[in-house]
Length: 299
Image (cartoon, rainbow, N blue to C red; front, side):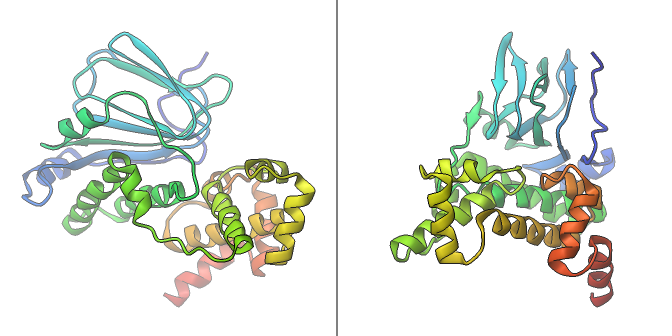
């Protein structure tokens, strides 16, 4: 079996130069916590890393889809979807993607005076429960924002912004309940609240290829009953609405990131770029490329 460290279709990868990292660790604003490298690996088939002496940074790996594994201190752990773990610095470890269902991971190498304390609070495999206010998509969006920031450039202002923002990102893993509770949700009449939950679930799973039965069963309804409830309140078929959410998310990525169109295609669960472009054109009236060009012209 071929083992791969990186180079996956649609991946995003940032490795900061040594002098940039050292400068950040000497900056009083960021000396306690600094980014070494970070990225996103989608469908990382045959992903495998074996570090006999570890590495010089702490490493957080967040599995958002699929399955993987890691080995630390002789103990083997399976890493399912919506789980994360941190590996300590300077300690032997191995990790990789599951053979049957390759993982999708966001990851970040970090160091600084606070890194060890963060690791001590988050030792072992950690699960992020999926619920009505889990904010999974918010966390993923912030991951992408930091990657985009570091893709823009390595000037001091950008690096300082990214490193200070790392505190917030890690706090969403440290204090999951607080992270969820600070986002106010409006509750209305029962049907309105149900639709709020349904659309929230769609947004939380916007990168997956959900079917109507998946969404309906999540709420304990038959497909026909869920369809009727959704149509009555929203006047859109559920899967048509879900498709519109995906295209809306694609528009945000085209506007605010440097991700390539094929990366956005893969990220949002479209395995065929031609199909993605056709749906995008049908909903927005233009191709993804034209949409990005017009946005840049307007800016």
